[in-house]
Image (cartoon, rainbow, N blue to C red; front, side, top):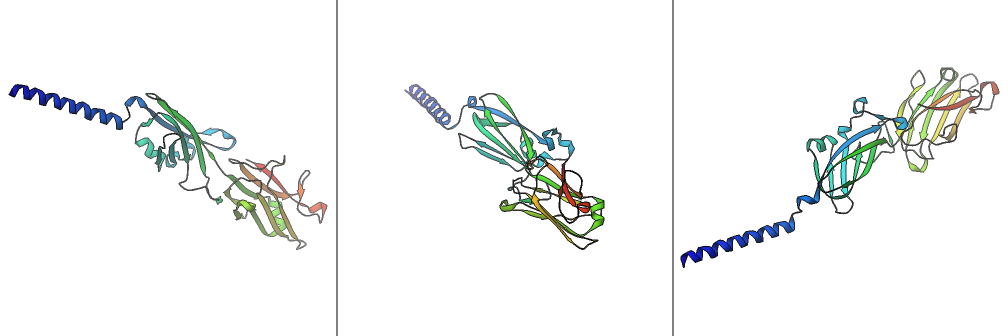
Length: 257
């Protein structure tokens, strides 16, 4: 009788073990539902040629956000370095978006440093390793002003300003004695305007200019453009800032570096 009781208790224990395993399987996804993911970052310099991390942009400090399109998953990493130190990331199979940016906040209207961002869609397959490569692009236009020496010698009280209309953002450039300005980074829109004011030394006449910032072919600058605005004395094919004298017309000409 006692032997029979031991058998019954043993069978009951085995039954409880199987029940517990079944409940665990209901709450934990089987290993076959997961895949693995790693990320590689690049930064595109002007003209979209890819540069390496050694050329001045530290992508290790970029923030990374991984968002699931179908399963509600969201994981944020303060830096790319943090993600790498965590090793290969395991994700449930499905579709994701990987978003990367150089700042934790939104891009400012005007800044003294570039803002990089990029994103890419990613599909994780069960039991597969997926490598995601994201190229981050500078989201602003870099603008710098250069006044030619001959023009600087003829003027006083020079002021150069860049504005972005209703999009917000403006900057008054600081000019060095050589006529070169500081550089700024601004949102690219079709409302970018450059204004230039000065006093002509010889006649004490005011010189002014205010026009949309465009290339010679009428294109507007776009994200990742490096724009240098050169202001100098009139030459053929340039626009006059002053029509007082055909011999001393002031002009603006724009080049892209």
